[in-house]
Amino acid sequence: MLLENFYKIFFFWIEAKLADKNWMWKLTFVSVFVSLFLAFPPYSLLADHLSVYGSKLDAWVFVQNQAQDLFHPKNMEYDVRRENMIFRWTLPLLSFLTNHNVVLIVVLQGILGILFLKKAGDYVFSVSGDKIATALFVMSLANIFVSVWAFADVHGYGDEFAYFFLLTALLSRNPVVIFLSVQFAFFTDERAVVAGGYLLLWWMVTKAYDKNDFSLSALFKAAFTGESAVIWVAWIVYFGIREYVQQKYFPHHSYSTIGTPVLFADAHRNGLGSSVWGAFEGTWLIMGAALLSLWLTKRYLVLFALFIGFAVLLATGIYVHDIDRALSYGFPFILLAAFILFKTASLRSVRIVFFFSMVVCVCHPQVFYMGYNKILWLEPFPVKGLMYLDRVLCWNFFD
Image (tube, rainbow, N blue to C red; front, side, top):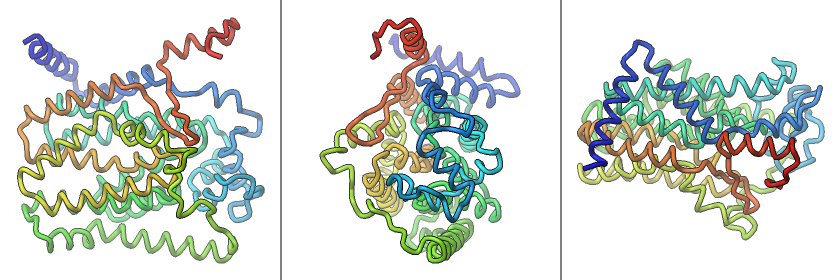
């Protein structure tokens, strides 16, 4: 009874707070504030490695090398990370345009993270028409890796650019916008190329519900026509450019770790389970509820297609050390789960699922994995403050 009363009062409070005209921006900024308070980015790491030439962190160093000569970057053999970056051109382009102003790029990345949340919230509200469900969803999304990484990535990986452009493509009906967006995403990180398949699943499932046609032929048609056709063209163009550039400028290039599921190795396996959970946290409840709804409504073909897509996400994730980054490219599954729930369940039921998703996402510590059996924690702002005082006053509590 006490929980039920709290639940009703909490929803009434949310509705009252979101009554003004610019409620979506208000929701977005509050969600970002909560996220930053609970998982403050490691800006001290960036500050410690800044120099007049940019950042001394290895990925940023190689980004600068690429910006100076994209097809002949120096010191390419220095680290295994660099051999994986030679076809990632979005950050080098930004580095070139900003004279390698790392701080400006990180700020831009944060702005795109805010816009990512705003666009996702706009979509959820357009489907649901409910401010409370939208608020719960946005707060959930703001406190999982895909959004937190917009501010926490000071290392020079740039995944948030890919996340943003993939979302832009997913929510657009304009073929030019879709094509350009996915090209930017593809040339940010190869994991976005795989995520192009998740966009196909998005259009397959949403069109099936819009047309109320869940037949195999309808799903197959949706995978190759309309917006999906643009993804196929984008893949052809992307791989064509890669093949040409590799043959002309990097004929002897190879990936030393390709084909190796590194997270099964003893040196890396300890973070696998935590990342499969931690990349999605409470949004697993949303995806689980959507799968249950598909099963109960006997949409077995849709269920099978989503199972295959998610299996690809998990299978590709185990081939890299930083599995949280890889799994977060599966954020379309979260949006798709929300869409399915709004189409198949009552608003009251959806609110309950979103409420508990939000509680888990907000309360769960923001941890992620970067390999070598080290699970990293983004400390809350008060803890960061204590760490700063400890460092200045030489208390040595955090050493």
